[in-house]
Image (cartoon, rainbow, N blue to C red; front, side, top):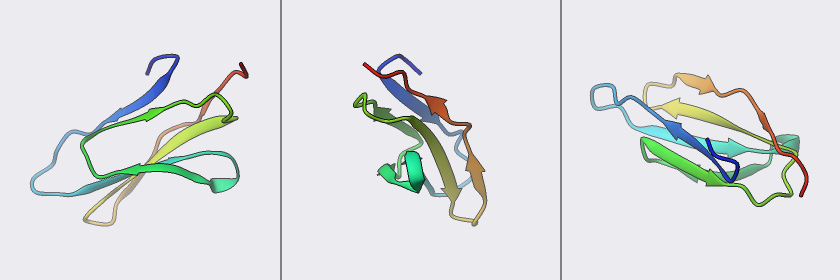
Length: 71
């Protein structure tokens, strides 16, 4: 992670497919990606951003929220 972005790197397992959702306040989905390396560029108006990764087997992992300081 940098001050301008949140990056998620997934260790590929077999032939699994992955979906990463970057989620903000009130559950709003800010962006989605199907890549094993996903980056969300902060706009600056988010209160926080967290990521939810779902694999093709149905397993889900949540990344703890990263709180964004107002500009």
